Figure (spheres, rainbow, N blue to C red):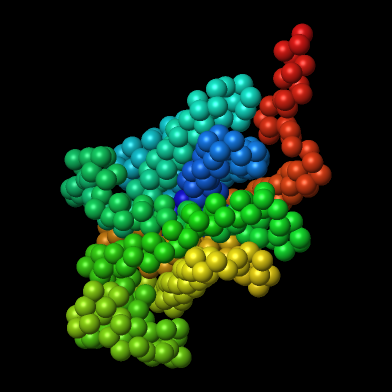
Length: 467
């Protein structure tokens, strides 16, 4: 998940230690890749629970088949996520010694809980995988609850670290030394709940649209059966709620940023000077200190940022030049996130309105094509959100306490580490695609009892029992 400058790989700097640029590159690659898998750890268990419970309560064989298949997919993604998460744990100390060396005592508690949550999730995922046909139905279903809770708790812990970087608390600085550490106060800092909620909802958007898109692609190929309809509807319903709720959470976060990080808000809004009331600027970039190519909508900027048509939005002119973030990257990433989110919210509203009017858009090929595209768009929106958040905090790693140049490694050899990370993530991406496509192909061929990723198949177990 996001810890230090996710997606700041797009930044370059001639100032700072030689390890600064490769550290940014590697951390952006690792976190930008891992965060997608983390979304599945947060949201997928809940979706599996829904279809599994439907299968038990309604004696629905299609729903039970979906639950079994999704569980195996979840296991594959969890295994790959374990590798990327392990890489991240080493990168924190390797790439950012200025952060971990100085503030390790402050950040140790959430990292410890995150590790514990990972093991709990792994244990109950294993029990759930091997529990099919071997446990009472409702007890087996209940194994998804601690599995899902552990995924959410682990995500909360990691987001808490990033929220702390935006809202540092739980310690005192005395002559440059960190003293009076209160790890609980650091973990439950002032910004953690809104930031976690935003990420939690984003996870359901990403997983919901991605999984629904898989079944939409199948229906485009003519597989419009009960399996594909249910496989589309359940995750799409979760994605719908998330897409409609997310703008309100984002608005609350924006209101908070106006007072806690005015430089980030100024970059979001492309505000070069303090304006009252402030317009909403759509598009545009900053060239030689002048805004070019933007479309201004009067007063709406004040409404979005300050919940008022009249209140001012601070401009970049109120921020010292050395403390300003990269404006164009922050602004374009923020507007991409908002634009995609708005588009997805509109699309799901249209779908459910049509369904309410008894029009089945699942039979519409243009709608199905849009549903396929919605998955990558949701991932892109989430990545853009983290780019806006992290690049917008620059030049600080810990807001107004530790600059990114002071947190990065002094080693110029980190380019080799970055090259190794590229090889690892390319290999894991190829491996994930090959394995998941193989599983899907065998399911379409009628092989329902695929071996679990880490253990024997049902036939092997039955043979062992007969001996």
